[in-house]
Image 1 (cartoon, chains in turn purple, orange):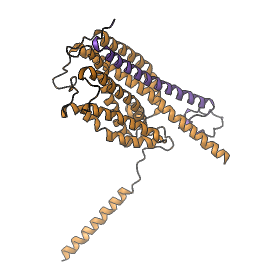
Image 2: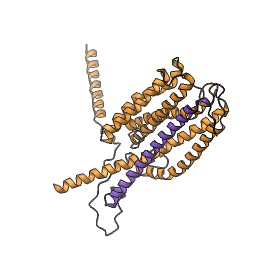
Image 3: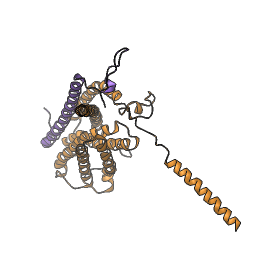
Image 4: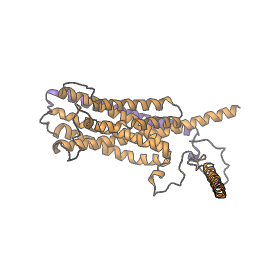
Length: 70
Length: 297
């Protein structure tokens, strides 16, 4: 067992605060990243995509009217 | 007399020529940094492999790089964090004066370094936004702010928890503690500014100015323990004459510092990817609204 001496509560509290803060930050960032990927995939599934992400027209294929993109 | 007249006419001719030059310089067409047709690639030159900064100005290229780097960086960060925690909690000996409370140093000091690193990153990105108009500079600054604020908060809280058993108080209004608290408030101000202006370009420029003004606080934090008589100890790692800490304590500190830095970089890359995607979603949704309005008209 780890012996942290008479000030163990301060050491444990410091590590606990760090763990909670870093975990909360990491979860919020990863969740936000997944949420944006999900929304973008949903838009692309509906056919709304950036000009540069549209499939290139093959010879003989009529040109699309152009869907705006960022 | 005639000499004076000739000199006068020559000087007036010279003045007219000078005025013409100034006028033509002022009315010369401005160099365009932005391409209206391709707003996603705001670079005047074609990206080449020889200039990675210009090459990475393309968000699509940057996203591809993030996708490749993130899995490796996650693994490396977790390994180093595990090793750092093991060395800090089970291997590092107690300090001859502070006892086991020295273990707080292994999380407090890297957090304090990253608090300043995060702000310097924002300040350099602010220059990128205002001067070079690098398309990813504002994204980098905006996403670094919450990460920097979290590490600043960790530094303040762990410092306070270290201060109580060692100094006998959680808080004193000395120069180091107060300047770090100001840094935390600056982070909160920047986050609030980005949240309060809807258009990302305008928000980015306003935040860049505030970030550059606030950058003066970083050297104040660093030198506060030298300039003023503070309760906080002076620099003991990066100092002239080498570190004053025993290698048995210095090794876990460096391992934790590297692990925390990698964690910062990892979270920053993921947050940047999320922000780029959020701006793409916003642009696509705006274009949808505009098209719907055109159809209705």
